[in-house]
Length: 368
Image 1 (tube, one colour):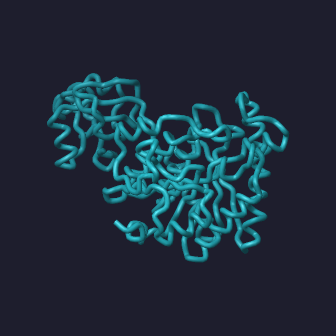
Image 2 (cartoon, rainbow, N blue to C red; image 1 turned 180 degrees about the vertical axis):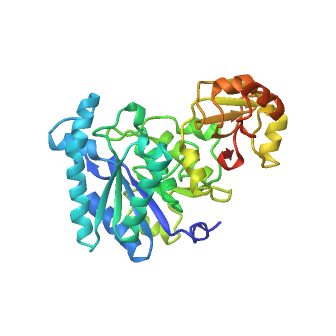
Image 3 (cartoon, rainbow, N blue to C red; image 1 turned 30 degrees about the vertical axis):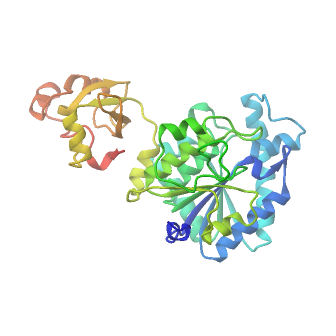
């Protein structure tokens, strides 16, 4: 399909900029940032709303202090991020101001999007910035984040941000031209509609010396975007006018396309939540939620793993371990151990009258 047709209805774009795309040999590159800023400014002139997710804070901080980013301790990374954030934002602010545009900084951790209320607060802030014509520039809050509340890399952060603001398109700018199915292919794959084991195997490997992401993290982000029912493009930041040319319909990079109807906001939030356990369900329950579009009942559950509480998110699998979906449970793991395989009448005898008719309501359920 012509690329122009695939992006025809795009209005809101998240652009993720990798560390290698804003630095040269570990030092912030004003030339590279100026090029990207000019490209984003052109998108704004065409009427697109743009949110930037930028890497480079730790690299900028380390470079300004004449330190290497290799083999840093966590406190050193946090300290260099604190130094680098100011440098990086000042570069963006100065260069966007030359185009008459204002910027606003948003620092996030996974904790900020894990809880529904904080997720909505972050969304409202981003929506307000966009409404005011201000370009939000997002980064992970590396100066305070620890492993338990980190996204892991900015590819994953950008997928979260795309879900946060219901973006129509995520563009990952890096130092690669796209996704190559085979190492010797002269051109990257043009279009992908699903992520399978072969793609994951081909994507294995780490990123550059100055970034935490590689192709594997980009494919993980693509899987999330496809699940959203939206679109994502991997392209080379070094391609002149790359963003403008992509939005003009040129076949630049690899586009990942969600075939299903886009998920509503709440289910996008659910799709991004980590699971704390899993439920194994029988064939009848699989058919009920996949074909019949029903809620999940206790009678269809055959196995439970993990410790979780009411309101947590759990994975749902078939007996073969194949993933079916995930959802928000109305019961704890201890309660489900008592009532799995039971009908409503039996559940009341075990837990009393104050019970839920469904283990996972359809509105709180995502089916893969």
